[in-house]
Image (cartoon, rainbow, N blue to C red; front, side):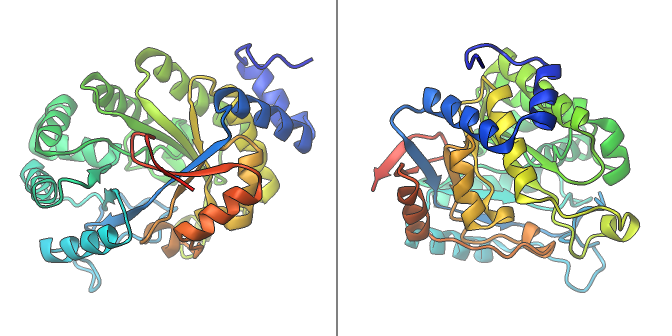
Length: 352
C-alpha cells in the first residue's frame, strides 16, 4: 500500500512516472492534495501579465515572443501604457501584476528601480510579482551588483515577490541545447535562494516537452525540493508544456512532438507526490485548455492559477486559451470543490 506520508526517492518517482496507470496515479495525487487541503478549497488569482519590453538578447530557441532592439516591432512600454493596463486590471478586481520582459541588454538597475517605484507609489494596492531569475541575473551583471544588492534595492522600491520563469528544466544539458545564453541551473537556484534570504517569496516552474529525459525532470524536482527544505521560500509549483508554434527550436528539432494531456497529468500527479514540501501546485490551463486545466484539480493541483487578463509570451507560441473569473468559478464547482479568490500570498480574499 502506498504511504502518502513517506518521502519519495528519485527511483520511486521514476517508477511512478513510467509505470503506474494514469488513473491510479491521479487517485494518489488527489489523496495527497486532500491531505494538504482538507477543506476542498481551490484558489485562483485575478491578475495581468505585463511584458514591459519584448527586446531580448538571450534568443531562447523555444520562445516566439522576443525581438532584437532594431526590429520594427521591438518596444519598451511607457509608464502611461503600463498605468492604463493596471487601471484596467483594477476595474475587474485584480490584485497582482506579473511583470516580466525580455532581457534587454541596455536596461540597468536604475530603470527597474524607477519602474517599480512608479507602480508601487501610484498603485499601492497592487502586488508586484515580477522579474524572473534571468532578469535579476542580467541586472546584476550590467549594473555590477550582487543578486542580494539587486533584490534588496528592488524590494525597497516595492517589489514583493519573483516568479519562477526561466527554470525550464534545471538540467544544464537541456539548457545548453534550448537556451545556451541563459543562466545555468545553479544560478537560477541561487537567485531564488537569495530572494528567500530577504523574506521575498517566489514560485518554482518547469517547462517540459523539449529534449529532456524523465530522469532530468526528476533532477529538476529534486533541486527545487532541496532548496525548499532549506528555505521554505517557494509558494507554489507550476508545470507547463512547451508550446512549439513559431519557435526556432521546432525548426531545428522537428522531431519534437506536442505533449499529450495524458503526459501533462502524469507529470503533475508525480510532482504532487514528490514535492511534499510544496503546499500549492497550480494548474496550467493556459497551455492545456480549460477542461484539462479542470482535470488537473483531480490530479493534484489545488490552484487554478490566474485569470490572466493579458498574456503575450505563451500565446506567441500558439496557445490562445482564455478564461475569466466566472468561468473559473464554474469549473471549480463542477468538480465538487470550493472556489476562492486569493492574493499573491495565497491568502483568501473572497469565497464563492
